[in-house]
Image (cartoon, rainbow, N blue to C red; front, side, top):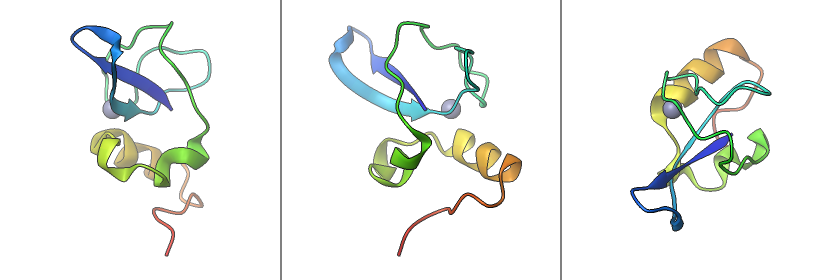
Length: 72
Ligand SMILES: [Zn+2]
């Protein structure tokens, strides 16, 4: 997962979490993210669903069907 920040950068806080492949700064949804932006474990995807990029989520789940969409 890679962070997309608000207009002022990291000081705005994370606007959206996207998913990118290891070593890539381009999200699955095609958005170009800063290589310097924060990354976090895919396990965190279910922690803050409001901030998740829905396109990335859908694409990621299609790539790795064993990844649980959400925890009960
Ligand atoms: Zn995305």
